[in-house]
Image (tube, rainbow, N blue to C red; front, side, top):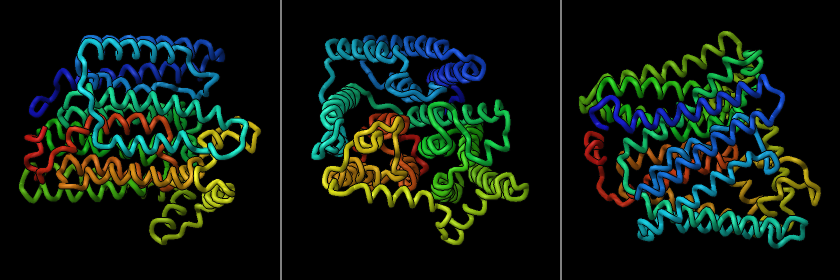
Length: 468
């Protein structure tokens, strides 16, 4: 994948991405024109059945389970409608069943050697905290929550160990291409939403971007995770390829900006500064100096869009609040969010040790509210649902995650670090962890990059290619 513009894997990943985009697009259009939700569910069930069969076949006939990861990464983003446990497409259970059959046959046939991976104990600690959350309080959902979380965490841990144990090392270019395709998928969904919007200015002004599986902030969070992998491809590919990936990087940056998520845009600017430093270092060594020009132009274009919004007053309120927050360090525009934080702490009462449980945001006392309330901060949401034990487990996981990246760093680890830290920074202003569409790609990145945590050499940017 170093010299060719397109390879079989390139076509495969982009083909998968288009398949999921088309599946999403069909339902997206159907929801706009078809009242009967049964038609929408039939379409989703057919797609899920196809995916389940493909995953099962891959697991049965290939000894590398990581070949299923692109499908797993794209899967949460194929749904153009929100759903809960009652409106969940039924075939999702069938797809899981097919995958389980594939796993069992894979284990019997290939007998993968047991491995835990570098981040296992942090993930296990967080899982245990989720199980214990709310176990110390009297509520109608206490034991239901305990047994459901016990089963869910147990399944997740087993699947994680299976994937770590049965995955083969992939080149970092291949890994980066998978998550670049994910970023492009989200960008296409964002563009499609605006193209078919009946009132574009209204949706822009009031952050009404909704692609079904998530809204503006959710899209921005995932794009913060995917963009660094695209930048890696810009730095390591030949001229023609770098131009292509530069365009794809700009597409993700513009899509992120159009979410109007202030926390995400702040994190994006920090990511861009890091990318600029990397590009300057490469340019100083006279390696493809035109690449830094492309990156600088892209950054100026992104900033130019913000200035354009100011001039034409597309969203004056957003610009005023954003400028206050960034330039004047005035966080008064976050008043509503501060109320959420205050109420979250007030509701802790005597539940500081183990929290009120993962299910508690669905209840007002013992009354089901009909929705799930987020604390709009990963740390506060953890404190609310899992208490100090949960926060301790979360910090232990963070320490383990960043330690393996900061110990004897190299440029590949830096790309992973920026991906984790950018989306993690956003998690200070909103919940990133526990949002399933974020957790699945995050865990997949951990699985795919685990073998790179072993490397103790300090790499220089000019020989990244040899590290693949």
